[in-house]
Structures are given as structure tokens and as C-alpha cells.
Amino acid sequence: MAERNSPGSRRTAAKQGAKSPSRRTPRKPRSFVVTCAERLSIEDVSTLRDQLQEALNAGRPVSIDASRVERADTASLQLLCAFFRTAHERQVHARWQSPASALRDAAARLGLTESLALNSSEK
Image 1: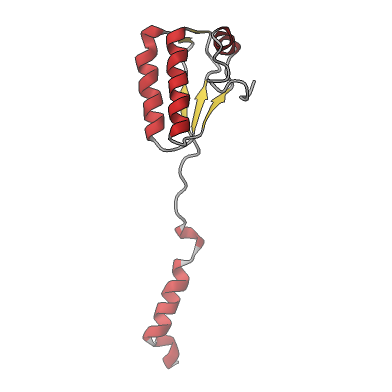
Image 2 (image 1 turned 90 degrees about the vertical axis):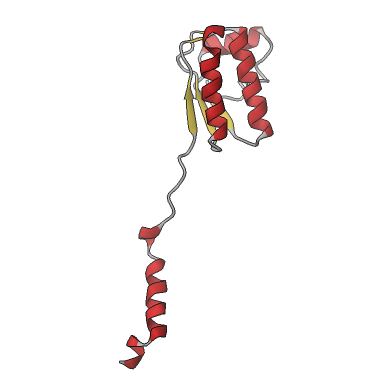
């Protein structure tokens, strides 16, 4: 009985309690999602830039949902190229989530398919 109440046995019991599964470290969210508007144009490029910058600063993988894109101009594609280059330099994983055919077509016309990593993304 004396052993159960000794200070050493209390520490052991406390250590065992600390290993319980209820005290897990919370997981980080899987990825930061940037949702593109239907029109990616020079008029809205600053909004997209801010969203992409926030995604880079989050320090998590980035997923760009471009499923609703109906039109993309050169300025927006230049911004996206800069984003992918910066993400690569910072070792931030960035990927497309269902890029619309309008985005793929615009990138192909400008020769940016590879720069935008659209050649390996989901269709």
C-alpha cells in the first residue's frame, strides 16, 4: 500500500495519463483553397493577388479552385505564373482543383500551360 501513495508512483500515474489519446495535437487544415471567379481579368487582378498572397503566407499547401472560370486574360495568367513560381521558390505545394477548359485554353494560347502547371492537373 505504501508504494501506491509514494511520490514516485504518483508521477508514474501522471505520466501514464499524459499519454492518453484525448490529448492529441490538433492537425493543421489540409490546404488553403483559393476560389477563382468566373472572370479572371485585369480589373480584378488585385483581389486575386491578395488571395494568393494570403495563401502563400499561410504556410500550407494551396489548392486553386478554377472550376468556374469562363474567361481569363493575360494579366490574370501572368499573376498566376508569378504565384506558381513563388510557391515553388518557397517550397509551398500548389495545385489546381478542376481547372475549367476556358482557363486551360487561354493558357495554351499564350504558351503558359507548363508555367501554370496545367499539364499535370486534374481535368
